[in-house]
Length: 271
Image 1: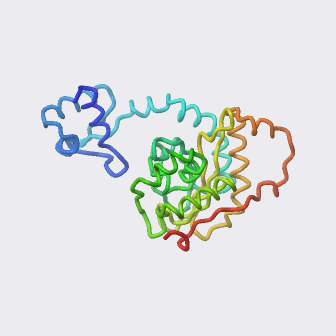
Image 2: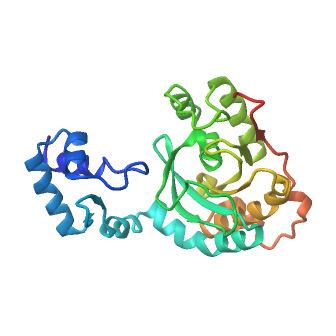
Image 3: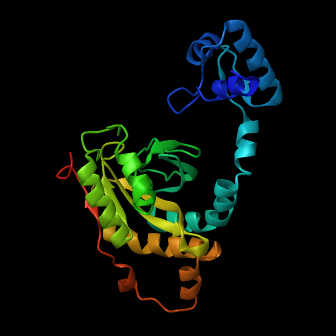
């Protein structure tokens, strides 16, 4: 491997299930010798890409977070969307997630945790397969047919008994999400959680992100969350310059306009 590949392989061993790793763990996972791993870890630590804890383990450093905020797809979108996301959380009292596509995954560029509600594993910077989350399913539904088939042909991980992994059921579900504009899923990633998500559009009305709410299963009807979600999506899309959202500016809308037909997935489908 080149020097750059060695460095990237070290950074690549960290994920949501491996937030802190020892020297030997990193050496084993990368296939690098202990001496090479130790030298590169020290260089990355001095630069700020990694932090070293009192127990000798390493984790991602703040310099990486600093660089991540500069990414146009994530940082600038987050800055524009954040005021609207706070308003949405205040109105719904749910966990709010703003996700963008990255390969076959959705990455959360913002994640607002609500008090006294169901705990969720999602976090700022978290990465999850598209098929396993409401925001991911929205992004997948609005992607090209070729990309959808590529994802459906891959190994789809099952997180709960209800995770939608059957390709035929997913095709039907994605078509319905694209038609209705909203995805509602239950216990896809964790049990006893309902997620509702809608797309966010950018220039040329292309879907660039998705915003979602997670609440405990059995909470208020998904219909009651859709108007606030749709209004938030429209506001962010307008700020991003989406033609359809800009055209809607100043046009009075009645609540009934947002009572779209829900697409709901539960254990009765594809489980």
